[in-house]
Image (cartoon, rainbow over the protein chains, first blue to last red):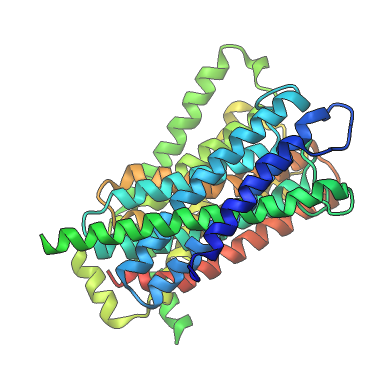
Length: 221
Length: 222
């Protein structure tokens, strides 16, 4: 029970996010209207993705320092969950873009950059599946994972800021601007970020434990 | 010590290339025929080729040429020779030498490509020195990121497919910057406008070289 408090917290926060996100008072703005509630679902996906990919990156470094099966599995599973969050982020973003910008895909620099970022991680999965031997697969995909993360950072955080975009947070601003957010939005937004990220960590945790058990089973059989 | 190693390794690559010219000549022929194919496909109606298209097609040709040219930088080495290197030189020396050598190779190929391309399809470039600078940065950028990728891909089973899959997403940010910078040079805009792109490209190159320098020893061990 003591070790699982954060899982309970994640569930509570997500329940709060969904209920409060759908029912609470939001600022009435032209064009945005009620779609502003997507803030609680779209933006936390990207926060979660970056954080979980950071976990994957950290475990890849850890694997190169100390090659154990556990480090490799956590890095791989975290990358997969990061991809899941990225796909959900793109879908929610496209839905939002449909109602505010008029098109699902308007070739916005941020949309393009995140699509390329996803391609990088799909390539990681393809690379992983092209090795038969476990140790070689683990080491080489760890090397690529670190390389890919280093390439992803300028892609997501530097390049879109240098070009004009419809997406908020361009032209020198940080990704989301804390000053122009209404305080009633913030009440739900921060718990939402925390909740979704914890959920992602939870999924990584469960998946990597399952994968470890599966590996152990194959070894003994 | 490291510097001397790098010089020796570059020399070795150059001599090897000189002795078996078929690889280099093959690349030149590849560039030539791709440019000619573009010429024929656009040549039907010459007014179709506006400046942005001219620019984009040139960079796409360069991208495919560099993927093909650099893919062989680790695949052509046989096992015995790699084992020999492993015993006498440091991995950092190998990767840096390969990067420098590939940069030289790409520079030659890019210049030849540009000359032939401009000859056949017309030369709308208004600021030639700036355009050449963007070609130089492109050669450095492509060779830095593709050398590491080719090292990774050469370990896998279906390396030629993997090379393309792994390299394209990584290289896209660089390509976008390069296209924007060379577009500025094509239109003869003020040079200070390209400074942003130039600095970003240099920064991305620095990141990639540093990461390759740190990671290559781990890759090489297998």
